Image (cartoon, rainbow, N blue to C red; front, top):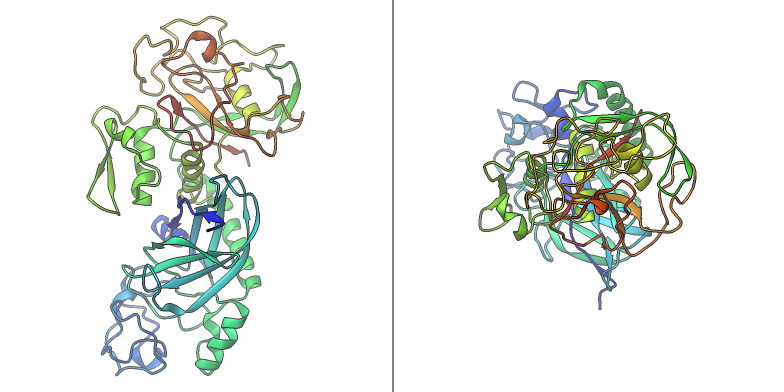
Length: 469
């Protein structure tokens, strides 16, 4: 029996491709019809049966075809240098795995069995937290003749954990053109190709150096990259929790509104599969198509309503995707901690206690919040325009319960400096109440804990947070 269940919330986002779209100065250069670094006489790794270089000839060979007078098809657009792969790893019992796992990543030309593409095999020790892992595959270093181009409709990513392949393999939209192999494969490839392509492989130190440079560039350009949704700054400082403990938090940003159907639909379309869509969402987000990759569209009139029926895992994966889309390192966007949520919702500097409700009030009625089934449905985010928290956040009492990053635990908080909750647990924290819950459930102090991370609920939504740099 398999030791792991691969609940594939995996996505392959083409980081460099997205950055080309924003016009950032990148360390690699994509060839173009007027700047074509490769002709048939300088390409040692294309199919000898191909008269010209095209994406329909993925088979490797060590000889060159006749000289081509035009740039190959692949050079007419940007080619990714690396891919980011995010996955979810569950034990055979269905519980999230935490720890460091030895993983091997390979590309194949078929969903099962098949031939390994470009002899590429990369092994890494990967940190898995709460069942979620992120890994960069490939290399941002070109270093000479790029490796062979591939047919993007026929390449599959194989992930092996401690020698066991996680199935199914995932079809990917693109592959790196400067693939980095393991040390043994580098030697093997060098021997087979007589050193012709040794420069096409980058060492781990080169990858790390290139990534460090990349993140410095992104940090410098952060102010020029628009956010997907407005956020509120919560300055560093202490506040008194609902349990009368003084806690110090660093400065952070938190979304002004709950994540909407419109934003979540962009996330679904970027992923192109059903990992984060379920039939209950169909009243507000339509799925189009009869097989993957699906497309999604918001039902008219529901774009600015908060997305619900989302699991904790859905919310975490959305945050990772948002980090990539905005050009930030994975992990920049995340769910707020329980303490961050509580401060943003109920604290006003100078007070000695939290407000009862998340709009600077100790009383609640239907003019201030959506609760107690007064309307029976969610309202568009920011509907109660006059009622926000001190920091400017809307709908933190009522509308939808909101996922926090913490496992539920007692005592709360887990520490007095940037608490993140217990290391393990059975349920993740939800805060804020919903459109169907009574007033006491919508108070700032209410902690709801009976929610496994995989729980799918009509009343559950979320908002994102990130550290203030």
